[in-house]
Image (cartoon, rainbow, N blue to C red; front, side, top):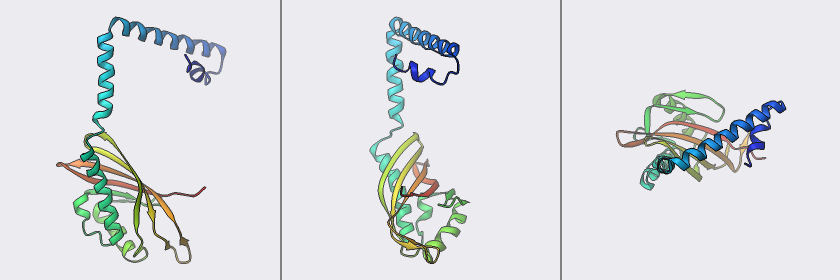
Length: 191
């Protein structure tokens, strides 16, 4: 077994390593014996594991619906007025800004974002560079999105060029509609 070394490297003594190897060997032997005598059960478990892994993958239509929430947010951010915010967010939406500030509730988030996007960040736009959607359940998805941000100056004298943001969006399905319930924004630092 190739992983024996990796599994025992954390052991501090020879006795711990031997004990770990015995457990590994016993576990592998037990699993082999079970599968030989219960092949149908093993195959059923195997297929259930595969199906359960892919069932949360949802359809491409569901994935596109989740992506549409991200794009709706991006459109409203780019416009600055957030005119459509109620159509794609939950009332208890939480926003975590790039410096770690946490704002809870759609009204409070809009009280922070709307003035910012209409003054200091007016005209600043986001565009999707990449987006990955993962379904945690049939009604919960996470979208990891890299946004390119147009150039801006904030605070005064500090210029931001070619900035990229990693945003994580938690999107939930309520009453058959996907809605943004939490987003977190991190500025990607160049190495």
